[in-house]
Length: 141
Ligand code: HEM
View (tube, rainbow, N blue to C red):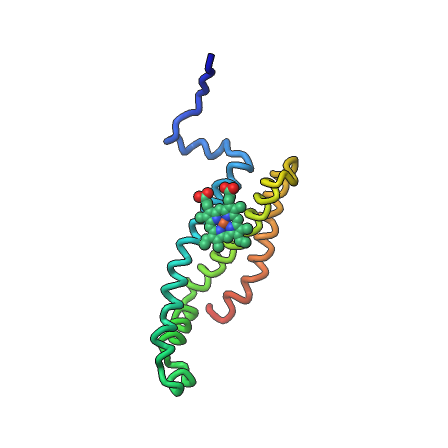
């Protein structure tokens, strides 16, 4: 005889209060993975301004008035972009640390300490991101 379980309503978003560390790790890994994929498109769009810049005269490059340099200078002058860069670092560092943690779990290493290693990923991510803030936000406000 098969047993049935009451899994609750999928639409019941209030269930987030019952989530365990493993569920948050799963959600954060998915979220950060797809944010990184989304960022890839922005990254390619910005870097592709190097193509017209590569045809610019050397004087234009030296004067830093080519489209690649002015695009980057324009973006970096915006406080919003600087703050988003800090967010991108947070997303990337967490995804890498949690990803390496998951690879160890897949290898059967640290199975008994999964909650602790997840919290360690969060703490190390926070430390690296906080340490980066002075560099990322230098001179923007
Ligand atoms: C050192 C770098 C990275 C490591 C160690 C890593 C590790 C992992 C691991 C282990 C998974 C599978 C998680 C699972 O078991 O469900 C995963 C999923 C994923 N990663 Fe990464 N990753 C890295 C970099 C990246 C980058 C650069 C991107 C995007 C450009 C990315 C995008 C994704 C996406 C979209 C998923 C699937 C998320 C889902 O479940 O829907 N990862 N990553």
